[in-house]
Length: 335
Ligand code: PHE
Image 1 (cartoon, protein in one colour):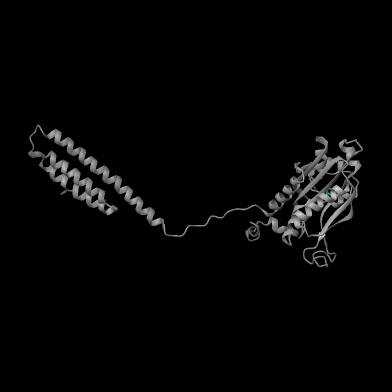
Image 2 (image 1 turned 180 degrees about the vertical axis):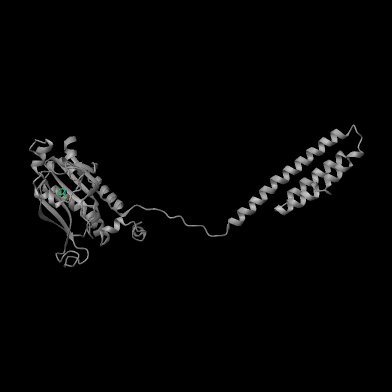
């Protein structure tokens, strides 16, 4: 009888190995454990056994029964689950493409500008976007009554605290805290209450400042010419046009030849043939008084350029608000 039980176990294992779906499991259960099943039939013969043998054979058959039940349960669960997964998952479907992000055009242009000035020996510094009136206006030679404050529609937190309207306050902070010579650019966000096709309440500027004994206007011209020719191409013409800023003297604005009409005059350049790209000048001596630079042989220049403006001219974008709408149809053109 013991060998019969052994034989049942072997053939059960073999048949179980061939089961492929939940229905096979049920058939096996009936064939081995059902009322007319193979194990059940053998157990019926127990009564004919020698009473001394019964406990031992009883134990073996109970173990075999438990073994078969647990194997059937386990494989049954496995097959049912597999069936559910394959019903849900069609592995022949093409995969879903994963979208890759890219660097925003403004940050690309900013990176290009930083690289170019670093090649010219400038280091990159930063200043706070929440500024005080002193650094944003007063120390830049813009006193409270000065009409230049009206040029910049300022967002105020309180009478003395505001969102910086330009990156020029970083000039003051660097001159207050650094030893000479100073040769830095300060890129960052600036804020003005203004909104139309060429203005957004937040935009980016890059400030430049070079202060050292013997620096003069020709250094300023050389650096800005290198900037224009690197960013816009070696054949783009530029001109320095006299202008006014309270913190530079003399002051100038730099224009580049209009890329639309090639200088003949059109709607974009207002028929002048030129497009303004930045403000600049020699640091006004009044500013040196505020930051405590007393050596009269020390001179320097500063400039401030708008990054969105550079990007618009370089890539012929006609509405600054496109940079901030986050429309992928626009942004992916530059990825
Ligand atoms: N801060 C000026 C502006 O925002 C630009 C500027 C910077 C002009 C440095 C001269 C020197 O308009």
